[in-house]
Amino acid sequence: MMLRQINRKTKIWLILLVLFPLLIVSACASNPDNQHKDSATPNKDKENTKSSDTAFKVVIDPGHGGKDNGATGASGQYEKNFTLSLSKKVQKLLEDEPQIEVLMTRTDDSFLSQESRDRPKYANKQDADVFLSIHGNTFSDSTVSGTETFYYHKHSRQLAQIIQKHVVEATEFRDRGIKKEELFVVKDTNMPAALIEVGYMTNPQEESKMWTDEFQSRVATSIVKGIKEYREKSEEQGILEWIS
Image 1 (cartoon, rainbow, N blue to C red):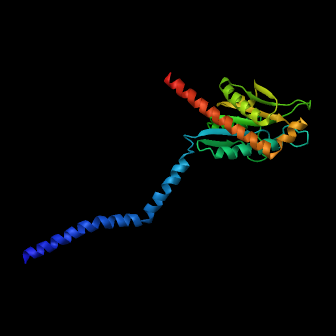
Image 2 (cartoon, rainbow, N blue to C red; image 1 turned 180 degrees about the horizontal axis):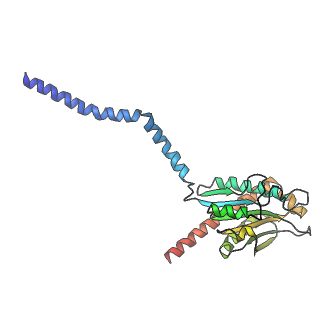
Image 3 (cartoon, one colour; image 1 turned 180 degrees about the vertical axis):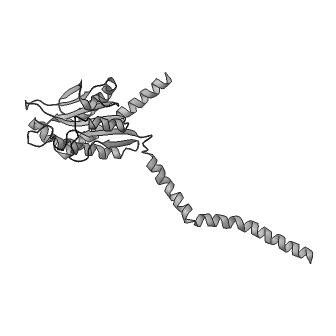
């Protein structure tokens, strides 16, 4: 009798030992909190792809704005509206780049003071990697045409060259090259900075193209290509400097 009781107890313990881990696994699998954690993990990783610590920060600066109309084109339209329209297209394309974080100095018809240096101050505060100011050109002679890019610091020259190359290919306007110029938006910025004059708004032929959606989309794509090429080259140069 005693032996049979012992055997019965042993069987019960064996059954419990087998069932207990199964119950634990089952409870964990049905726990809503654990399911939430599992499903949230990929989203968290996705958000981290544009972490401020790892992303390549690009500040896009639509020239002029508010009471500062910029150039008045041959059609009477203002430069400030052209630069904002084109910049928003650039912004949208850059937002699709997983390793790039895009920031804008303005997203509407806001006025930014030249005297207070709002634009370069914003880029410096964000600790951006690249600053690009977008403009439309003007001249008293309506036959003057072309695309040109300005820079100031030596470390900005390569950026200016790359942006100029890509934008000229897109505009198909005269290549006026890059120039060193003491413009506050490229002088007061700590990071590599360039100012692109896409075309002359005072030239009727160029301006008529500049307002079209097809033209702006093509130029926006070229600017993004330029930024990506500059990023790749700067990273390669950084690796070469590190191992040399």
